[in-house]
Image (tube, rainbow, N blue to C red; front, side, top):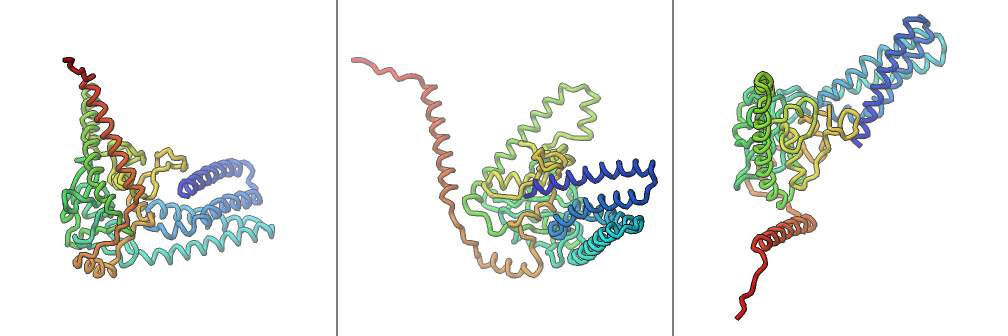
Amino acid sequence: MRPIRKLFTFVSHVLFYFLAVRFALHMGQSHNLAALACDCLILSGIFMILASSQFVHILRSYGNIFTRLMATEFLSWGLPLSVVAYAASDRPSIRVISAIQLLFWLYFAYRYQVNKARYEKQGCGPVPLDTCIKIPVQLPRPGDAIGTGGQMARLLHQGVAHTETVIPWEGRTMLFSSWFENGAFLNEVPRILKPDPKYPNYLLQRRPAIRADQVELMEYVVRSMIAQNAAYVEKLKAQRLGYPAFLRNYLDRKFPVTGYDWLGRYTGRRAPDHWTCNVVYLEVMRRSGVEVVRLGHGAAGLRTGWFDIPNTEDLRGDDALHLVRNSEVPALLAAESSNCQPEVVSDPDFEQQVSALVQSCTNIFAQRSKAKAGPVVQASN
């Protein structure tokens, strides 16, 4: 559904601005008020269809900056165009349609403002009222995601809404992410979840919790990702040694080799061995057999992965990730203190897949050992 929505949004915007330029050039030559009214009616109608088709999505994803920009764009164009269409024509049919469009835009603006009142602006952007921004260190569990606020991001020298993935690591809970200066990086939970309220964070808790076999696999996944990232850094450093000195110095200054995906940060491209902090969460979950929201389809929804920057606000669109509220914290802490673990349901298909993978690897190693040993020659008496 998400690729279809993005494709429809992309095509509608291309059509809108193409017609807007064409109508503006034509109006500069004709100066016909009746034609102006029809042109404004068509343009307002394009955005009205687009806004009505995504009405619920816009209200639900208000915390996403791209959604807020799109809603502002709709109102900035739709209201003036419908007013001009009504005022520039004396035909009853045009006036009736433009009046309907004007009523729609007024209703859209009213609902948008009412929905805005349900959010409060924190250091990590608008979040729903009662969102817990002072997270106890006992709450995060493997599979959760932590979004940092602006003050915390500046303290860590990361971007606003920097994402940390909660993982198991050698018997304890750790955080894993991709940092500007380190690339794939492990972190202690208390370093991010500080008790000082001037460093707000929010917790996206996966519900239901991931299974025990997925938690066990997650640590191996993280180890493999760290190894992949280190190999990428070594490879890129070796490649840059062959560049001219001025180019190598420029790239090292603007895009240092740290294992962080600088290109993906600005384009949304997803690489196999270096990532942004948000893509790290998606990769860890995907490789651990956990279904997550699909991001990175591209501007036109054509699965190009370009110009579709995954961010923490998009992770809120995952129905399995729940934004923890203040009213829920006491019950969650009580469950943690009493060692109330969620019921673990084992998936036999998942266990069979892992067993088959281990068996196939064992067979491959056995065959290679036999091939290296060569044929066995029996001694004759």
